[in-house]
Amino acid sequence: MKKFISFTGLIIFFLALVSSSCKKDEEVSLFVGIWNVRSQSTVVYLNNEKYSESIDLYDPGDMVIKIFDGGTGEHWTGDVKDQNFTWVLSGNTITVTLDDEDNTVMAMTYTVTDTRMILMIDQTSIEGSDTYVMNMAIIADRASS
Image (tube, rainbow, N blue to C red):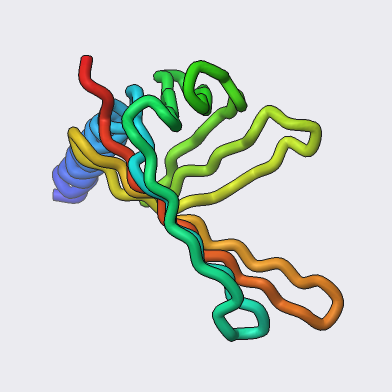
């Protein structure tokens, strides 16, 4: 009986692992592609009071995020490549490391479907006695093939 329980436990663990792996592969395949940024909204708070707010709208091709399989990507403004980056998915978070002097790291929560990606960025910085909180939402649509 003990061997049966251990064997059953092993099978359940294996099935959970395979199922988890398939879900992760599905998430990655949804993420990979060319995305046209449609809007970027930003709200900045200074010491818990709204300091500024902006909404930028873009036409297809104005701002493009290219996400490649294997954890790399590019950011384009029009026909100009602005930035290379690497990325890693973990749960509902994508962590992006920019290829810049500081190797800037940004963690973003995300939602992705076949046609739309939403990235949410929340960052806090303290300068002297002031606390700044930035909330940014980026909405992008998958580019047509």
